[in-house]
Amino acid sequence: MSQMTEIRWHGRAGQGVVTAGELLGESAMHEGKYFQSFPEYGAERMGAPIKSYTRLSDQPIEYHCPILEPDVVIVVNPNLLSVVDVTEGLKPNGILIVNTVESPEKIRKQLKFTKGTVWCIDASKVAMEELKRDIPSTMMLSVIAKATGMINIKATIELTQEKLSGKLRPEVVEANLRALQRCYDECVQG
Amino acid sequence: MVESKFLPLDGATAVSQAMRQINPDVVAAYPITPQTAVVQNFSQYVADGIVNTEFIPVESEHAAMSACVGSSAAGARVMTATAANGLALMWEMLYIAAGMRLPIVLTVVNRALSSPLNIHCDHSDAMGARDSGWIQIYAETGQEAYDNTLQAMRIAEHPDILTPVMSCQDGFITGHGVERVGILPDEVVKQFVGEYKPRYALLNTDEPVTFGAWDFTDYYFEHKRQQSEVINSALPIIEDVFSEYTKLSGRPQPVLDTWEMDDAEYCIVVLSSTGGTSRAVARGLRAQGVKVGIVKPRLYRPFPAKYIVEAIKGCKAVAVLDRAISFGAPAGQGPLFTDITAALYNEGITGLNIVDYIFGLGGRDILPDQITSVFTDLQQIANEGQRGAMVRYLGLRE
Image: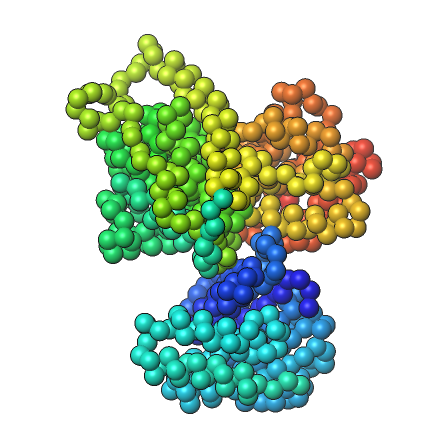
């Protein structure tokens, strides 16, 4: 992995994708890293496919432009796979992370993606079981931690606890932390 | 040096944090994208009692700047924020604020002017106001936007300057982009900006004064001459403030941000966030042995002409990147190019190969490959000894 890691998020407007990107940046910042997180602004309407970007680096980040050749692509909403070319520009040794019920092998076949690494997690299932709501965006942080090592899962869980405590009831906070740990444990590489 | 605390902030919120720490007497504002977060956050601070500011929600930007002018003349420390058409609607009052020597600080989150309607970044809004008598500072990052806001307050209120300051950053690119921003402790900022003691105040009835009086053929000319003298002699004082803040924050605050210019053969001069993208590309080219450099003016008014000329005059070829068009100027060049070429002429330099690239209008992305292509063009110009087209376009479909 080069000094700077460039990440592109795919989701649907209203899913908390932008917030997840910011949380990722904040998580990295707590580990002493620099970051940028910015959405691609188009016509924002609930449910529309959106892209968001995160850069992580040990050095101050000077680029102020969209990411065309990401190191990591994260697909928060599985139904985008047939709508958007999610692997466009992904570096040959890049990492693709998908919220899906499918296996990495099936995703590779569907996308005709033969290089790099694919990580799959059924984050929607975990979210439904733990939070009773399909809000998988922030769960993807666990997979990023495992797949890239750019952030630490323990620190991410602590940060989430710090951010949610005071806003949510203790049992809901606990459920969120459990969901993060589960996604870290349950994601599979292929 | 004082340690900063790092927060994840977008550029607009970074400015509202600076405003919270300054805790001005009056903020009068009207919301407009992409500035909205500045005033929205700040009005929340007012509602929550975190600041003691009198917040005046007005019906337009013309009213916003009018209320700022009135409040500042009354003796208050005053701030506001706007963008694009909002700044255009302030036009009349911009000149009045500057002419009355009112130290107002205005954040501009740069956005394209209509028409056609567009909410994204370019510099047409602030560039149109460059002759209004305001000091102008441009930020590359959210960090700089925060730092510049604090310094702008000190510069505006300096007793030998007393001139309003426009602090600009790129709409959406840094305005809505979240990054790691270092925030100084509240107490340190309070000390840095100090207490504002107006030299003249309408509410000081012991020493009655008149603001905005009639001034016909008898003295108007002299007053404008004085105003011009003030802004043009402000540079050393601005440098003092920048230097004091550098020591305080540990973050260098040059008037002219130069990178590898000592032996640069090819250079790009550009404002704001694109300065960062250009520098990042230049680092790669330097690693390949190409002698490239970057010049990014942080201060645009007063124009640091001598510094820019000194930095670029030894280059084989220079590209100016303009995020605005000065309509009807020779070949449709941009304002930065016009200023730089005038400065070169005034210093007796006429043989430099220098070209202008209009880019990024209405938020059109500026990509690393395009910056690389500019450096390739410059090498070609130097090798062939012919400038070719004076004004070019970057990222335009033709």
